[in-house]
Length: 201
Ligand code: HEC
Image 1 (cartoon, rainbow, N blue to C red):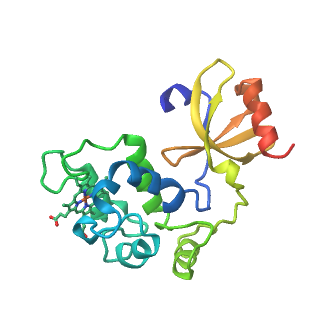
Image 2 (spheres, helix red, strand yellow; image 1 turned 180 degrees about the vertical axis):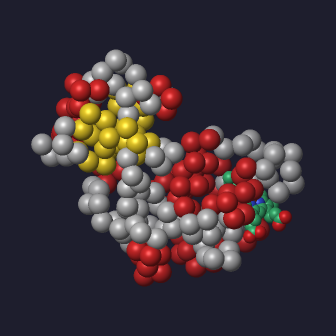
């Protein structure tokens, strides 16, 4: 999908904001694939993925299974990348998560593994600030957090999150975490209209 679009999109610098958090982006994935064994009172491996404060306090941290900024060394994510036959593979006895979901989780960890972007705790805000992000500072309205379908002028479709306008272009964030500036001339008029509407124009 990305390859199709790459003909007309120009890479932009990464956007400095918390674009992904646990509550909105990762939790729905966990719910679908992991809650069966990792939610509520008798969660396996003492890992209750449903309990946000427990996740923040006990699972996220420099020496924990989720290491902010470091998806490669987070055993949490590593388990989901193992061969399904590995005894440590998660979801246990299940199938591998879709690549999109794994990308979202990697991006979440990379961006500081913030649990709830609307209510960050001090340690999370500090981390994001130190790593060069701007905590929630993009003014992204909640409607703009959704991935929408965008159509190019020649009819190709991508799913992306709207970040804002840049002159006569729309800034779009792909699910893999990359953002692009797409000139209006390369977008279908309907998508241009959507972008303008979302920007309040
Ligand atoms: C069918 C049940 C089942 C499902 C579904 C499942 N797990 Fe597990 N998980 C377990 C069991 C059992 C353990 C404890 C394993 C052990 O101690 O050897 C565990 C342990 C873990 C651990 C290690 C916890 C620790 O601190 O040592 C992680 C991380 C984990 N699971 C993540 C996940 C994720 C993420 C998903 C969804 C993608 C998932 N699991 C789905 C059964 C499951």
